[in-house]
Image (cartoon, rainbow, N blue to C red; front, side, top):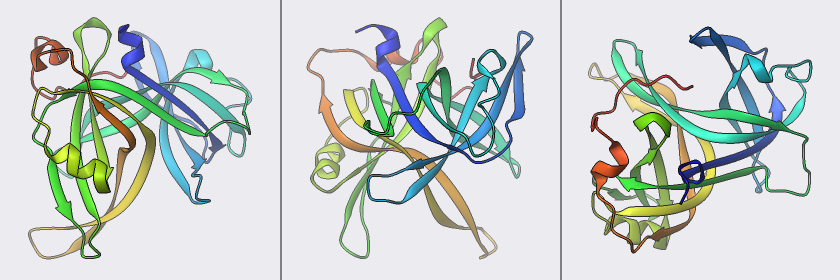
Length: 223
């Protein structure tokens, strides 16, 4: 499989805010914006998007509906004194909106890089959390949190670190509450891939091949 096929993302939604410069790499500015992407259920996700100045035009403005093709990228950011792994939709191409297409499609191929976490909610819903290491160009990797449900979650719970997976799903935002050491509770938003289909690929591939030379979760530029 070509490296670019390991990580495919398509989104279609409405721009929620004015794009702001987020960072710069080798003189190229990258902007951040929030995209409101509808779910098939009728709800919506507000998703972070990173876009190069090379793709910026008059149509990249609040209230405008756009289509994006690109990849999911991860990076580390220090928030309130601690590092957090964050996700963004990295736009590689802008497309006209397509009303007939699924507005949120993710396809990933990578290796599990930490043991799956399985749990059952108070309402009896089974959930499994996975962390997938996905190759990127120049020896880099993206670390993508994924969540599975029900029967897929039970299967995911049996997987091992190093197993190579192919995943289909959607990029989603999820609000949750986190209790701090002092007992107070704060609201946070998690970004992850909600899995609709998962398969464990038969061909053997070690985790080291996915992580490259550096097995840590390094702060990596998104370009």
